[in-house]
Amino acid sequence: DAGVTQSPTHLIKTRGQQVTLRCSPKSGHDTVSWYQQALGQGPQFIFQYYEEEERQRGNFPDRFSGHQFPNYSSELNVNALLLGDSALYLCASSPWVGNIQYFGAGTRLSVL
Amino acid sequence: GESVGLHLPTLSVQEGDNSIINCAYSNSASDYFIWYKQESGKGPQFIIDIRSNMDKRQGQRVTVLLNKTVKHLSLQIAATQPGDSAVYFCAENYLGGAQKLVFGQGTRLTINP
Image 1 (cartoon, rainbow over the protein chains, first blue to last red):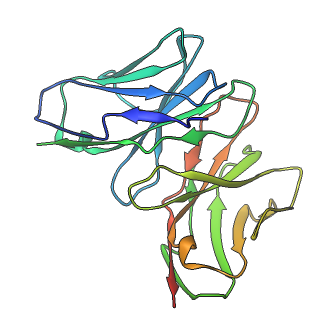
Image 2 (cartoon, chains in turn red, orange; image 1 turned 90 degrees about the horizontal axis):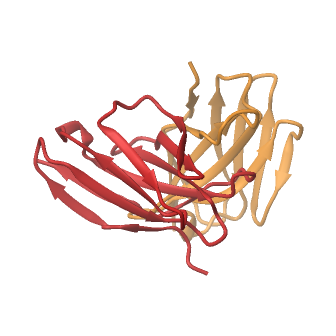
């Protein structure tokens, strides 16, 4: 049983560019959450998707947007990249009625 | 606002000893807590969780203690092994709301041979 998978593993972009990160949830999970983890910090909640809709959003600007597909996979899009967007982006999945979130290995984004 | 913090950013223990990692939380409405382990280059891995109607829960070599009076959470690891070296995060959530975990900064656990 595959766990949460994310792609790509690493990405290098320049300021002002746009990026799309992808996530496939654990089998049987229908809810996907995205987190940003800066170096040396704990993950910070960006938003959560269920039934192809954004259900909850953390304190992140509109440059951060997402999408969930009918097969429950999800994308995180970041526009107009800033140097401060450099971080590890984590995807977590769970059943909507469950509590435990299972994380992928993340995508390391570097903005130059 | 909501916050989850940790008393110690680093902890070094001898192999075979017990480890205790502490966490303080500030949101009295939080009723669900999770400990995660994050190894270098990996995502957080679920260790153990506890609901606010409990004060202790045991897993394999791990025990979580919850003291709601002082808003304190701890993770005890018995007979620490080299493979336990990692950063440990506590996270809180309010089950009446969405599944939005609030993480602390983390404690790095180092095992000395």
